[in-house]
Image (cartoon, one colour):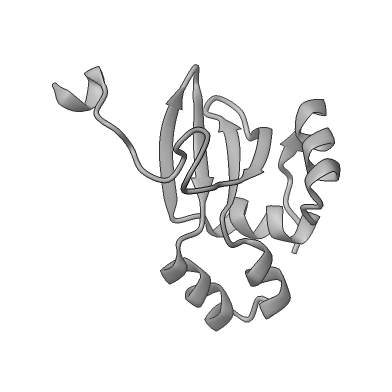
Length: 107
């Protein structure tokens, strides 16, 4: 699975620190089904549980699909540039799973 996505230096560092494989990043970038606008021209993309089942049906190895669980990529809107990547947690930190009410969505 090869993609032409570019990584920022920060994203490369985070990938190494967090043990995130290139195959998992490519799978999330290619087959994401959740998009959350997080500001500053960036969006958080990830794969839901339903999307993970679709990946298995698509023929992606289950070891790669398992690594996409809770993996979030922060991507610039204007370019296919991965700014950072992280494993989303429900209990702490920023929320990258669902869009909250903002001035744009409230109007």
